[in-house]
Image (tube, rainbow, N blue to C red; front, side):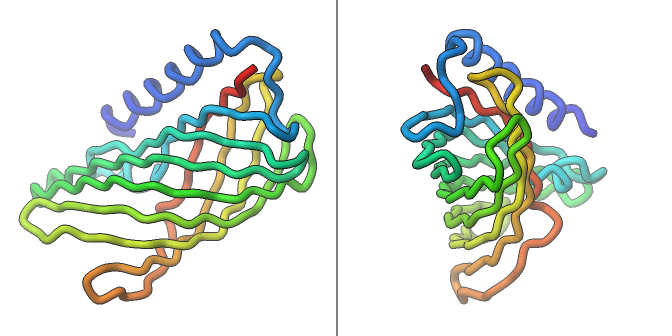
Length: 183
């Protein structure tokens, strides 16, 4: 894994652990009305490519509607630089997702849907706007009452500007992260 991707993963986990240290053990995921802070690293396969050097991370909120269903919103940031071509790309995006947890236990598998958009700029190229829809599949692992790890994969269907071409983004939609539930 390249150095910048490693640093990003460590920073995201450190921020999450710092937030967890102040959260106390009273917050619990899976209970209606609970709110959690999300720190994630995504597009892992793209970031560890030998020719790419970059980071893809996000921060957001997760709100439990009921014991088995939650909503979340994430502000996403991606920066990639390809050393072979000298081209760099910056993406800023916002997404919202619904999760249905099949079982609420220490390991809680879930599925759901995601919708979002991102604006992207590439050196020497035009700006790009994309709207996307995705199906998600993942698992949340509770470490203590107020802290959980998650890993998920999503298959995205992209609608791009200017032609609004339809495309599937397969392979670069893996995400890992940390959730700190507030008291």
